[in-house]
Amino acid sequence: MKKIRAAILISGRGSNMKALVEAARDPDYPIEIVLVVSNREDAAGLDHAKHRNIPTLAVENRRYCDRESHENAIHTALVARDVDLICLAGYMRILTPGFVDKWPGRILNIHPSLLPKYPGLNTHQRALDAGDKKHGCTVHIVTGDLDAGPAVLQKKVAVLDNDNAKSLAARVLEIEHRLYVRALAMVANDMVLQGDGRELRQ
Ligand code: GAR
Image 1 (cartoon, rainbow, N blue to C red):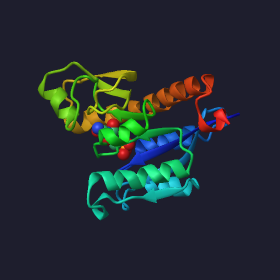
Image 2: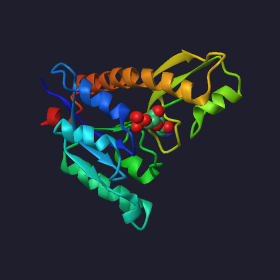
Image 3: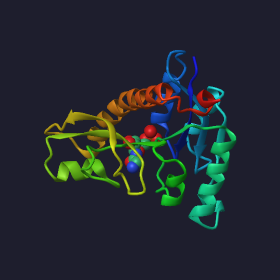
Image 4: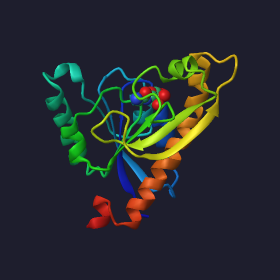
């Protein structure tokens, strides 16, 4: 089975990355994870990728003089691995339009809110403060505007009366893992149908 080659970008814990890595171990899953990149070398998620023998790379933003040169280093690593699709999984840096334009429609992100509600940070507290009865998460295509690209899939959870930001975040995180696995497979299957992976085009 020909697979879409995906890289995952993380900044920390990497539980979404882990979910994608585990899903991709299934021979029928249409994705091969070919690289995990972190902008922090102490990101806990890197250990799990290493454990699964997935190549990892820390490209520490603090070692670069500006955003562009940091992103260029990541871009070079992705191209070197023949990456078709980039999955942001708790990657806590905003990508510049210059980088996004090099990967049109080829960057996915998971965001812990029902976009277009609550782009940016502190989404769980903001949902609680607004008295929302439903909260959730969204997998979307990344565009040049923060957390604003078209949604691939969205999943809701009920907000409970006794929820705080921590309990709500934990429940949303659980559904994030399943949603990202499904959304990534959908996007990849679409790319396979269109012959739109580097390996498939050869
Ligand atoms: C996840 O909840 C993800 O949705 C969120 O960061 C967390 C990362 O957890 N991402 C964003 O807020 C991006 N705007 P993880 O490292 O365990 O996957």
